[in-house]
Amino acid sequence: MLSVKDCSISHASRSLIHKMSFTVGAGEVLTLMGPSGAGKSTFLNWMIGALPEEFSVTGALWLNGQQRDTLPTERRNIGILFQDALLFAHLNVGQNLAMALPAAIKGREQRKHCVEQALANAQLPDYYRRDPATLSGGERARVSVLRALLAQPEALLLDEPFSRLDQSLREQFRQFVWQQVEQQAIPVVLVTHDPQDIPPGGKIIQLNASQG
Ligand SMILES: Nc1ncnc2c1ncn2[C@@H]1O[C@H](COP(=O)(O)OP(=O)(O)OP(=O)(O)O)[C@@H](O)[C@H]1O
Image (cartoon, rainbow, N blue to C red; front, side, top):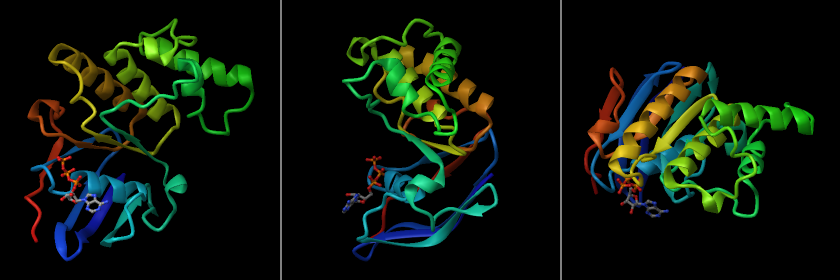
């Protein structure tokens, strides 16, 4: 379970987020919507611990019974996926994925096996040795979701992950993402401008234009 309690964020006396609170359960998706500049990406950056110092923040972030906003990014165990799927160009697809695996999964063969299994589950069975530059937009998107999830995050943040895909791919990719999230049973926070991205039954928070 992910909980945000009374989060307020401002920048140079301009209020972006004001006393936001919510909880998201395992396998649930909370969608954040709102006009451009309202502070959606800023809020996600706060959640992962990547907000520049010039922002003032109050509030707390709890995940699975532990306060996380006081921890450094690498100890929060929160995954994030952006609209641009960035893969390392000098590594093949399998190596890109293997890098994400937790250190607790030991041995080259076992790590390779985990990646191959994930690729097979995502209907990308023979993609281990592929050069990322040869992937289609939809394939890149699927690989980047796998990479985020192979790290075994306890929560996942999605910052407009569907917006670069064309309409037909979008629908397929949404199904793919919600399937993966359901399998992993982790809380998800989605930022989007498109109401069609919202999964059925998900909670929604509408942010207003920033005050200042
Ligand atoms: N590093 C920064 N320094 C100064 N201002 C910033 C910084 N990052 C973001 N901002 C400002 O904070 C406000 C919120 O930006 P943010 O990117 O969070 O909005 P958003 O709701 O995600 O918008 P969009 O829907 O366009 O992505 C904007 O006015 C932006 O210019």
